[in-house]
Length: 258
Figure (cartoon, rainbow, N blue to C red):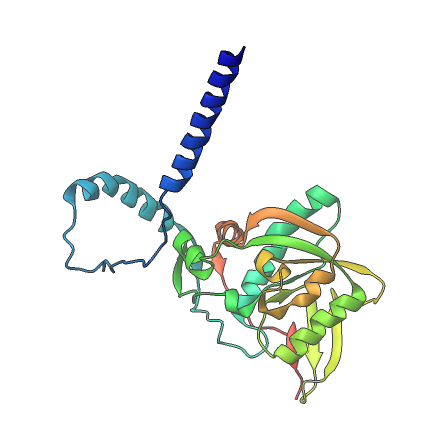
Protein backbone atom coordinates (compact mmCIF):
# COMPACT_ATOMS: atom_id res chain seq x y z
CA UNK A 1 0.00 0.00 0.00
CA UNK A 2 2.88 2.33 0.88
CA UNK A 3 4.61 1.46 -2.41
CA UNK A 4 1.44 2.20 -4.36
CA UNK A 5 1.07 5.63 -2.71
CA UNK A 6 4.71 6.36 -3.40
CA UNK A 7 4.28 5.59 -7.11
CA UNK A 8 1.13 7.73 -7.26
CA UNK A 9 2.90 10.71 -5.66
CA UNK A 10 5.86 10.26 -7.98
CA UNK A 11 3.60 10.25 -11.05
CA UNK A 12 1.88 13.43 -9.87
CA UNK A 13 5.22 15.15 -9.41
CA UNK A 14 6.28 14.14 -12.91
CA UNK A 15 3.02 15.52 -14.34
CA UNK A 16 3.41 18.82 -12.48
CA UNK A 17 6.96 19.03 -13.73
CA UNK A 18 5.91 18.51 -17.32
CA UNK A 19 3.24 21.20 -17.03
CA UNK A 20 5.70 23.68 -15.55
CA UNK A 21 8.20 22.83 -18.25
CA UNK A 22 5.62 23.39 -20.97
CA UNK A 23 4.67 26.85 -19.73
CA UNK A 24 8.21 27.87 -18.93
CA UNK A 25 9.43 26.83 -22.38
CA UNK A 26 6.56 28.45 -24.26
CA UNK A 27 7.73 31.32 -26.44
CA UNK A 28 6.06 34.70 -26.10
CA UNK A 29 5.70 36.21 -29.60
CA UNK A 30 5.16 39.94 -30.17
CA UNK A 31 4.47 41.72 -33.44
CA UNK A 32 7.25 44.22 -34.00
CA UNK A 33 6.47 45.50 -37.49
CA UNK A 34 4.59 44.80 -40.70
CA UNK A 35 6.34 45.12 -44.01
CA UNK A 36 4.81 45.25 -47.45
CA UNK A 37 5.45 46.41 -50.94
CA UNK A 38 3.28 47.97 -53.60
CA UNK A 39 2.75 45.90 -56.71
CA UNK A 40 1.74 48.29 -59.47
CA UNK A 41 -0.48 47.06 -62.26
CA UNK A 42 0.42 48.95 -65.42
CA UNK A 43 0.91 48.55 -69.17
CA UNK A 44 4.42 47.18 -68.69
CA UNK A 45 3.10 43.92 -67.24
CA UNK A 46 3.09 41.34 -69.98
CA UNK A 47 -0.21 39.71 -70.88
CA UNK A 48 -0.59 36.03 -70.26
CA UNK A 49 -1.78 34.59 -73.55
CA UNK A 50 -3.03 31.42 -71.87
CA UNK A 51 -5.34 33.41 -69.58
CA UNK A 52 -6.41 35.70 -72.44
CA UNK A 53 -7.32 32.76 -74.64
CA UNK A 54 -9.29 31.19 -71.81
CA UNK A 55 -11.20 34.42 -71.03
CA UNK A 56 -11.86 35.53 -74.60
CA UNK A 57 -15.12 33.56 -75.20
CA UNK A 58 -16.56 34.87 -71.92
CA UNK A 59 -15.49 38.44 -72.73
CA UNK A 60 -17.13 38.26 -76.14
CA UNK A 61 -20.36 36.88 -74.67
CA UNK A 62 -20.53 39.57 -71.96
CA UNK A 63 -19.91 42.34 -74.47
CA UNK A 64 -22.49 40.89 -76.82
CA UNK A 65 -25.11 40.97 -74.05
CA UNK A 66 -24.14 44.45 -72.86
CA UNK A 67 -24.22 45.88 -76.36
CA UNK A 68 -27.59 44.43 -77.30
CA UNK A 69 -29.84 47.31 -78.41
CA UNK A 70 -33.00 47.76 -76.34
CA UNK A 71 -34.29 51.12 -77.55
CA UNK A 72 -33.34 54.39 -79.24
CA UNK A 73 -32.81 57.74 -77.52
CA UNK A 74 -33.84 60.74 -79.62
CA UNK A 75 -31.40 63.07 -77.82
CA UNK A 76 -28.59 63.18 -75.25
CA UNK A 77 -29.81 63.57 -71.67
CA UNK A 78 -27.81 64.68 -68.64
CA UNK A 79 -28.67 65.13 -64.97
CA UNK A 80 -27.31 68.69 -65.26
CA UNK A 81 -29.88 69.79 -67.86
CA UNK A 82 -32.45 71.19 -65.42
CA UNK A 83 -32.70 73.02 -62.10
CA UNK A 84 -35.37 71.18 -60.10
CA UNK A 85 -36.24 68.34 -62.46
CA UNK A 86 -34.37 66.83 -65.39
CA UNK A 87 -35.44 64.68 -68.30
CA UNK A 88 -33.14 61.80 -67.31
CA UNK A 89 -34.20 62.02 -63.66
CA UNK A 90 -37.87 62.02 -64.65
CA UNK A 91 -37.23 58.98 -66.84
CA UNK A 92 -35.63 57.04 -63.98
CA UNK A 93 -38.34 57.91 -61.45
CA UNK A 94 -41.13 57.15 -63.95
CA UNK A 95 -39.44 53.85 -64.85
CA UNK A 96 -39.34 52.81 -61.18
CA UNK A 97 -43.01 53.72 -60.78
CA UNK A 98 -44.10 51.87 -63.90
CA UNK A 99 -41.98 48.73 -63.47
CA UNK A 100 -42.06 48.33 -59.67
CA UNK A 101 -45.73 49.09 -59.05
CA UNK A 102 -47.11 45.82 -60.50
CA UNK A 103 -44.65 43.85 -58.34
CA UNK A 104 -45.58 45.82 -55.23
CA UNK A 105 -49.29 45.44 -55.97
CA UNK A 106 -48.97 41.68 -56.41
CA UNK A 107 -47.31 41.44 -52.99
CA UNK A 108 -49.54 43.82 -51.02
CA UNK A 109 -52.69 44.54 -53.08
CA UNK A 110 -51.72 48.20 -52.63
CA UNK A 111 -50.19 50.69 -55.07
CA UNK A 112 -47.13 52.88 -54.96
CA UNK A 113 -48.15 56.50 -54.37
CA UNK A 114 -44.96 58.19 -55.51
CA UNK A 115 -41.25 57.68 -56.15
CA UNK A 116 -38.21 59.51 -54.79
CA UNK A 117 -34.67 58.79 -55.98
CA UNK A 118 -31.47 60.84 -55.68
CA UNK A 119 -29.80 63.14 -58.15
CA UNK A 120 -26.35 61.75 -57.31
CA UNK A 121 -27.47 58.23 -58.17
CA UNK A 122 -27.53 59.11 -61.87
CA UNK A 123 -23.98 58.20 -62.84
CA UNK A 124 -23.90 58.88 -66.58
CA UNK A 125 -25.53 60.67 -69.46
CA UNK A 126 -27.90 58.85 -71.77
CA UNK A 127 -26.44 59.58 -75.21
CA UNK A 128 -28.42 60.06 -78.38
CA UNK A 129 -28.73 56.88 -80.40
CA UNK A 130 -29.00 53.19 -79.52
CA UNK A 131 -29.83 52.44 -75.89
CA UNK A 132 -28.24 49.18 -74.73
CA UNK A 133 -27.97 47.06 -71.64
CA UNK A 134 -24.59 48.74 -71.13
CA UNK A 135 -26.43 52.09 -71.02
CA UNK A 136 -28.38 50.87 -67.99
CA UNK A 137 -25.18 49.71 -66.26
CA UNK A 138 -23.57 53.10 -66.93
CA UNK A 139 -26.57 55.01 -65.59
CA UNK A 140 -26.77 52.84 -62.48
CA UNK A 141 -23.54 50.89 -61.83
CA UNK A 142 -24.43 50.30 -58.17
CA UNK A 143 -26.40 47.41 -56.70
CA UNK A 144 -29.16 49.59 -55.26
CA UNK A 145 -32.60 47.99 -55.19
CA UNK A 146 -36.17 49.29 -55.00
CA UNK A 147 -37.83 49.34 -51.60
CA UNK A 148 -41.23 50.76 -50.65
CA UNK A 149 -41.64 52.56 -47.32
CA UNK A 150 -45.00 53.52 -45.83
CA UNK A 151 -44.87 57.12 -44.59
CA UNK A 152 -47.53 59.10 -42.78
CA UNK A 153 -48.59 62.33 -44.50
CA UNK A 154 -46.96 64.51 -41.86
CA UNK A 155 -43.65 62.75 -42.60
CA UNK A 156 -44.18 63.13 -46.34
CA UNK A 157 -44.33 66.88 -45.66
CA UNK A 158 -40.85 66.55 -44.10
CA UNK A 159 -39.77 64.87 -47.35
CA UNK A 160 -41.19 67.79 -49.34
CA UNK A 161 -39.44 70.23 -47.02
CA UNK A 162 -36.17 68.39 -47.65
CA UNK A 163 -36.62 68.74 -51.43
CA UNK A 164 -37.63 72.38 -51.04
CA UNK A 165 -34.36 73.33 -49.34
CA UNK A 166 -32.08 70.85 -51.11
CA UNK A 167 -32.77 72.70 -54.38
CA UNK A 168 -31.52 69.73 -56.39
CA UNK A 169 -33.21 67.77 -59.14
CA UNK A 170 -33.82 64.65 -57.09
CA UNK A 171 -35.97 62.42 -59.36
CA UNK A 172 -39.62 62.20 -58.33
CA UNK A 173 -42.72 60.65 -59.88
CA UNK A 174 -46.32 60.93 -58.69
CA UNK A 175 -45.40 63.92 -56.49
CA UNK A 176 -45.64 67.54 -57.69
CA UNK A 177 -44.10 70.54 -55.91
CA UNK A 178 -44.45 74.26 -56.64
CA UNK A 179 -42.22 76.90 -55.07
CA UNK A 180 -42.39 80.68 -55.33
CA UNK A 181 -39.48 82.80 -56.58
CA UNK A 182 -38.00 82.76 -53.05
CA UNK A 183 -38.21 78.95 -52.88
CA UNK A 184 -41.07 79.04 -50.39
CA UNK A 185 -43.55 76.19 -50.75
CA UNK A 186 -46.73 77.06 -52.61
CA UNK A 187 -48.15 73.59 -53.16
CA UNK A 188 -47.33 69.91 -52.85
CA UNK A 189 -49.64 67.22 -54.20
CA UNK A 190 -49.63 63.46 -54.71
CA UNK A 191 -51.44 62.53 -57.92
CA UNK A 192 -53.22 65.89 -57.89
CA UNK A 193 -54.39 65.74 -54.26
CA UNK A 194 -53.16 67.79 -51.31
CA UNK A 195 -51.12 65.72 -48.85
CA UNK A 196 -53.21 64.51 -45.91
CA UNK A 197 -51.28 64.59 -42.61
CA UNK A 198 -52.99 61.45 -41.28
CA UNK A 199 -52.98 59.41 -44.48
CA UNK A 200 -50.28 56.79 -45.14
CA UNK A 201 -48.45 56.83 -48.46
CA UNK A 202 -46.37 54.12 -50.13
CA UNK A 203 -43.10 55.72 -51.24
CA UNK A 204 -40.80 53.82 -53.60
CA UNK A 205 -37.12 54.63 -53.22
CA UNK A 206 -33.85 52.74 -53.12
CA UNK A 207 -32.26 50.95 -50.19
CA UNK A 208 -29.41 53.49 -49.97
CA UNK A 209 -31.79 56.39 -49.38
CA UNK A 210 -34.03 54.38 -47.05
CA UNK A 211 -30.99 53.78 -44.85
CA UNK A 212 -30.30 57.51 -44.56
CA UNK A 213 -28.24 58.18 -47.68
CA UNK A 214 -28.10 61.85 -48.78
CA UNK A 215 -29.38 62.73 -45.28
CA UNK A 216 -32.90 61.52 -46.09
CA UNK A 217 -33.50 60.64 -42.45
CA UNK A 218 -37.29 60.95 -42.76
CA UNK A 219 -37.40 57.40 -44.17
CA UNK A 220 -36.37 56.12 -40.74
CA UNK A 221 -39.79 57.17 -39.44
CA UNK A 222 -41.37 54.40 -41.50
CA UNK A 223 -42.31 51.25 -39.57
CA UNK A 224 -43.33 49.31 -42.70
CA UNK A 225 -40.85 48.39 -45.42
CA UNK A 226 -41.33 46.20 -48.46
CA UNK A 227 -38.19 44.89 -50.19
CA UNK A 228 -38.93 44.10 -53.82
CA UNK A 229 -35.57 42.46 -54.69
CA UNK A 230 -35.56 44.53 -57.87
CA UNK A 231 -32.39 46.42 -58.75
CA UNK A 232 -32.75 49.92 -60.19
CA UNK A 233 -30.49 48.83 -63.04
CA UNK A 234 -32.86 45.98 -63.90
CA UNK A 235 -35.77 48.41 -63.74
CA UNK A 236 -34.05 50.47 -66.45
CA UNK A 237 -33.31 47.41 -68.58
CA UNK A 238 -36.95 46.31 -68.38
CA UNK A 239 -38.19 49.83 -69.11
CA UNK A 240 -35.92 50.26 -72.13
CA UNK A 241 -36.97 46.84 -73.44
CA UNK A 242 -40.62 47.89 -73.42
CA UNK A 243 -40.16 51.35 -74.93
CA UNK A 244 -38.47 51.40 -78.29
CA UNK A 245 -38.16 55.22 -78.40
CA UNK A 246 -36.83 57.12 -75.38
CA UNK A 247 -37.91 60.77 -75.26
CA UNK A 248 -38.04 61.98 -71.61
CA UNK A 249 -38.85 65.65 -70.89
CA UNK A 250 -38.35 68.29 -68.25
CA UNK A 251 -41.89 69.03 -67.05
CA UNK A 252 -43.90 70.71 -64.30
CA UNK A 253 -43.51 68.11 -61.55
CA UNK A 254 -41.08 70.25 -59.51
CA UNK A 255 -40.92 73.92 -60.44
CA UNK A 256 -40.24 77.41 -59.16
CA UNK A 257 -42.74 80.05 -60.27
CA UNK A 258 -41.04 83.39 -60.89
